[in-house]
Amino acid sequence: MTANQGEFKAHVVHLSFSGDFGGREKAASWLCRAMRQEGVFSMLYIVVETRNGSKRNSNLFNALGDTVSLCRFFQTHKRFSFSLVSQLYEALLEYDASILHCHCYKSLFYALLLKFTGRFSGPVVYTLHGIELPFGFGATLIKAFQRIGLHFADGVVGCSREVLERTLPKRKSRPHMVIVNAIDVPLGGFESAREGHTDARTSLARTLGFDQTRPLVINIGRLCPQKNFHLFLQLIKCLSGMKYEGPEAMFLIAGEGPLRAELEAETDRLDIRNNVHFAGFVTDMDRLYRAADLLIQTSTWEGTPMCLLEARAHGLPVIAPAVGGNVDVVRDGLDGTLYPVNDLAALTRASVSYLCDQNLREEHGRMAFEHTRHAFDPGRWARRHFSFYHQLRPTFRLKEQG
Image (cartoon, rainbow, N blue to C red; front, side, top):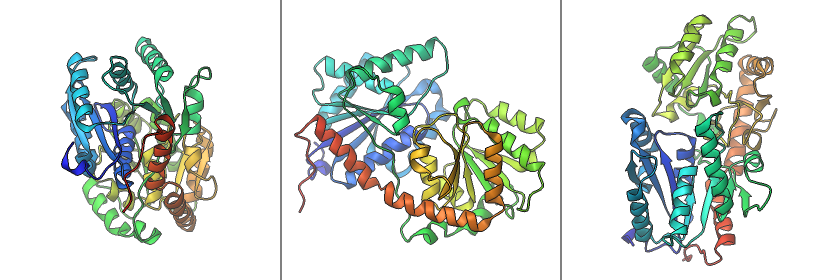
């Protein structure tokens, strides 16, 4: 046991396999931090899949930010490694883990292997982050592994009601709980969250080369089919050909992924290059949120996307499809807008409403900030997990208070 563990009475190890940085890694690292703040020693074991390439691996390390100190890294270039099983076993012994909490199907597979071989005796918990897979042999194999894992996991957490209901087998259901993600909000209220908006806008405009006088609309995510950026580009095309009372907006896509070349080609085909900027992988997300006026999401499915919580914590209104955890976060018409998946007409109407009314953007942004501060508090998030852990292991205890 390391020196800084002495004050803790319970130890939780989170485990994830990652070749790049995404919402799952962000949620796991922030949950780890929230648990420590609530008195539970928590570490995030990240198995870096080096076959994904050094650029994507570097995205992972850069984006973890200050939570990197809560992480322990392992590496593998294989799809399965006996050596990795041994490394994880030794690391679990070192930190005297009470709970092993998995965040992807690969980590669940390794955790159950450790349990079945007698190398770990505590509960294995699996969080469903909402990953859907395309058709194909590989996807079928992954789904089969996850289905088996769900059968043997001691407990299952869903980051949204929809994800849990759609994924968890109805028969022989394991102990389960819906626990929506959470986020820290800036101290000082809504004004503090929007403080520095003009400076951030000026700085970002100089860096990326766009007109800082225009409202900035952002869409964030990996450039992959799930995020449905084609719909976002169609929206930009519709708005560029419309006459409405509001100012013409500037649109920014933050993220990298396999569809970038295809999306840039579509941008040229639609003749909207002057209205949209591909920012790539952004490390300074705080500046991006402070500079923005509106977040639009176009995904075909979601768990509980961290970008929605981040935007709302920065006082931004959100337009999002009514899928997954979006409906648990956004209160339609009160602090944001939900629209049917792939409904371009509904998305366009909502976008025009916000672009034409700065007061509406500010009102919904303020309400979004307040709701996020009260309903998605990291401390409550951590304590809900502790309650679930206690169901699985009654001896699970927090540190003794003063």
